[in-house]
Length: 544
Image (cartoon, rainbow, N blue to C red):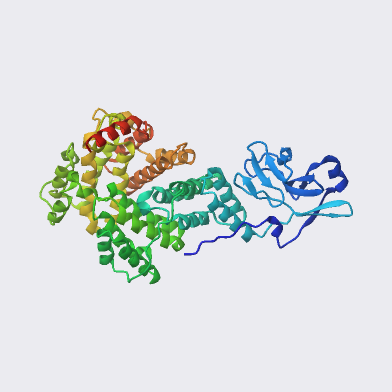
């Protein structure tokens, strides 16, 4: 897996020349500093201790004029707005981030000439990539955006900055994709960019969001190397390796598949089977699989290796919630569900049921899997709509009672991902349906039955695309401080839009839209300071 890595070179290394008159030496000697314009460039000239220095007048940080800065005795130029400091001899940034463009100087017959030739685009593009990667260490958020722009200005494709970021960071996540929502959100940000970005700023924002999130979640993380070695891809053996939590064997199958020229389409079913074999990480496994496929479709095979290594590790490391008491009967019910049931069920039959009664009832249903999916999905839509905000705000509760909007939103995003996988691979339907029961069964105790669908009905339920496109457009300026929150906003919006597109006349459509409306317009408590203190006291007390 190759990653471009070059050391930023001083602009004086330019292999071409374009010498232009700047001003007379006498004029600069008289004034000490001067602003000139050449070929659209605004350049600051300084005369210090008999040496002439030339640099861009605009600070690369926020564009303030460097002519107004101070120069120390060792030729260090300070921008007085934010104290960024540059070595005028090389352009190196001594405090801040971005380098400063400097220009070679010579004097002929009393005239100062500057070489204003730009470096070749390929060199500038590599420098921008290198500088982008350097910005991750301190998570220089604004600088990341500037380096993406510089890369594009040098003729690069902005999507290449995403591809490189995935490669640079893929071994920085200890639990693979299970460590972050960045990769699964990335697919939706690229969809939003492709479909709704009408300005250069909007197109940049979507790419910047992906890169900044990846950089944030792996900040200061060491490398967690992946096992080496490969073996021929055998789907059943791969699934068993995931089941056994044997990362080395699972990754050997992935490497062998890639070496043999297999594509995602050859491997997707194996990943889907592994993801749905358990109630995995509260449904994230299925979402990882669907979004990995979307990312590969948008970014191409060059990111296949890092993404599939991340996905494999994520499935190996994910929690298997069906092994805890609340969901423990999952496997037994699944194994006994070999034939269609004889009971016609409705969504209302599942009202208030916990995970086990809900799973048992689903296994008795006479409806075919696709029909039963819509019955259960209606229950998930009501679960979203009725989430009890008091449960989110509670402080004196045990850990098992913790629940937030983001937890409930997973009912919808999981269902959408598992739905799509089961349509492609029908043998997964029972896993999908039972895990949906686990979701709304657990959340049954977090419902506020006083919440009404009519209170949150959208303005034009007959034309949900207007509502959904409005949400999508607002995401370009979402104002969320946490990347994980904006990730949930976009993946929820896209999951809802996809489900409605798949079944535009479904009985649950208006309930789902009302639930999304409430989700987007209700408080989201993310920091539970008093609850954390209460639970710490409670847990440690049990250790005595």
